[in-house]
Image (cartoon, rainbow, N blue to C red; front, side, top):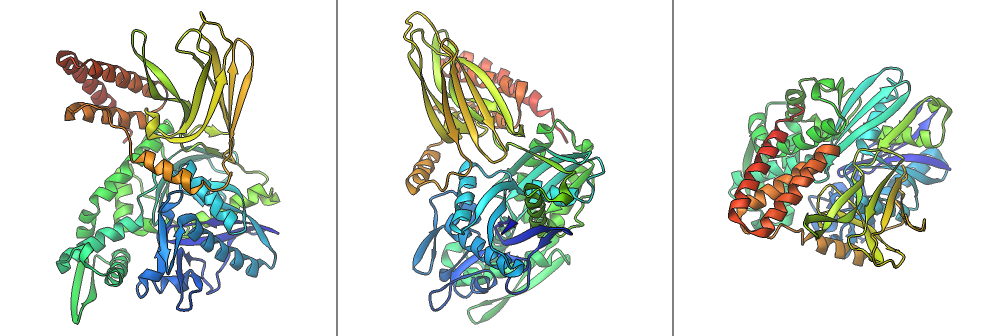
Length: 566
């Protein structure tokens, strides 16, 4: 039996295996390494995957689906022919095709895999990926963050050097950033950040929108088949601009042939907002690693979308250093998953390499904060293991009951970066009971222990009795039920905005929340303090106090903004 590494991508997927000669990519049935992440049905109703399905995207858009990775872990379905599929079901079909290709190439059963995921996939999305693997007949031994996998592929050749890497991974549907250090054969992830809804497909959409504008059409008025042809041309134009400064494509509009033109300069302008969205994850990763941009020694570009000259120019301009792309950006993540498979199998060629990773999201509980004398407001987030903590990790915090004589607490576990738990992802709940002592507050410790396989152990110990309650949250429990997913999506639709009608106050609240997400430790605590105090002042509805508090918070935030890593 073989253990393989898989890059399950938005646009293309690949599979690899670690051999005595290092990681090796495995070709699919048509002799290529890249298998398009496209699923469809043919004219007889049979499922087709990969190139066979990709060729029908334009001609049979109602029977073919692509770019479904972004819907992993959600209730969204995609119609393929007469049947609706969830993203994890479609992903399972792609994984099953890769598994069959590997078994044909290796001549042995393939039952276990390492699968790469965007660094910024949350717990729900990761569980959906595990579920896809299970449906494909694979035991998913571990998920590996995509930039980490890329760094493994690069680091294998430089394991005797000491370097600080910044890996920029812009794939078809996701954008990730990781910072790693290599020293004495140890590859340590320092930080990760990203945007799970930003990728090369968005740049294609920008071109498609421009072509629609040139044609004088609106998206809702164009038939799916025509829109498919236009998107195909938009993608070809985007790729063509990587080779030359301008490009012209021909679109058959009814019986009339129309020339659509695009220049690099125009493309750069069309994608300005997309480029600006890349800045925040870059800044967050550098800041979380405790570095400045000048501390970065190497910049590695991975993901097919990094071939765009506009991306390479933007990265060079922002970080003042030329990025590297010596390995094929489409293949490097898959090669890295192969290295991780070798590490897990304890291959002798990798005996002198140690790999560490980090927790991509902050893990914590809900907590009530004091907002006035004997006044408490629930729903605040208490971080316990902060994002980018090296794992495995164990952290403990001590809490106390709000009221004397309180006989129990209900503890909810969350994942995310918002100061309010309603904006984060709920993971589980635990109830803890105390002795009935009416004149006493009860102290209790909450300990989180998180390992590389995604298992989170929550231990709550009552100090007065030593009694402990345990909650285990597995990284690989199987797919969330349809009901659970629907419930979570409904909750996300109700993301709470502070109930104040004054726009400038709401803007400050949102600015504080954004600042909280982008900092850690003492600075994060200071931001939360400002948030709690400002909300308390707003609750009293005294215009004079609100004005003074607003001026104080604005000064605090302006000073914070001045602390720029670039």
